[in-house]
Length: 374
Image: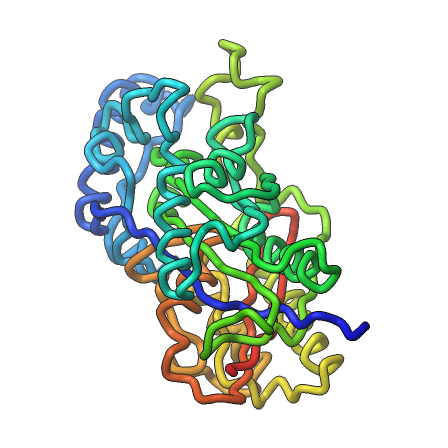
């Protein structure tokens, strides 16, 4: 029996209605910094506590390329006394916040594919952080959509979506499923330290969905999955120590390492060459000249990283057409970033064009999904 070919039939996107500009974010942070410096004036004068420098729009845009970000909880994020998402806790019989986001992205993908939820066999919720430990968010999303079959959560930080796509493609190839939704609801502002000048601007919130199916049931047009590859290398340079073993301990609540922390320069130095080599080597193994790739849909973490990765893969400075950016208006949305780029920038490609969806992040982890327009 010949192997079943997996394809991407459609993608879906849910964008929160609220957004925060750099100007708004800087005003909030600087108000907090001024209050911190006033409260600690005595110890700052003695040198026991470091003065907190202000942030600026120029600093943010030079460091990241981010100009604004969509968020689920704007008012509390900008409140210098809170600077974190806040909403009323929902009872167990109501759809959770992350599940609600995921359902909206899934419905968008299903509508674009002309697919009914009853035709889907599985749901994989692939995201950097889950709202709870169990029951799985994927099962809640599955239930809300009315899908039979199975569902489970998976977490590989910023690479979760591409790891989910390979997992879904493997299910299709093996015949264990014919239609799989990979959904990535990301409330990244919930694990960002908004009081850290070096990272308060990085993240935004969003949800994406990717419908992976057997080629013989896919709509036209679609994207044939030519090949997938995953890679992990352990590193402490991006870390979040929050978890059920420490979340209720008074001594640890609110400590910086229970939120996103990174050694940014080390990450840049180590991840750029790793990812560029991975894309080039995977392309060569598939018989594809990396320089011929029509488009790179890269993880939207930092415009400098993407610029250099694309240059190393293509052999020249990539244009916006070759390596599109959504980072400027969405911020870093973890695993969803490369999927947003693909979702918003694929319609114009011609039949036969080949590109790669690539994510990379904490772990280190990286995933490549080579696709051909059909």
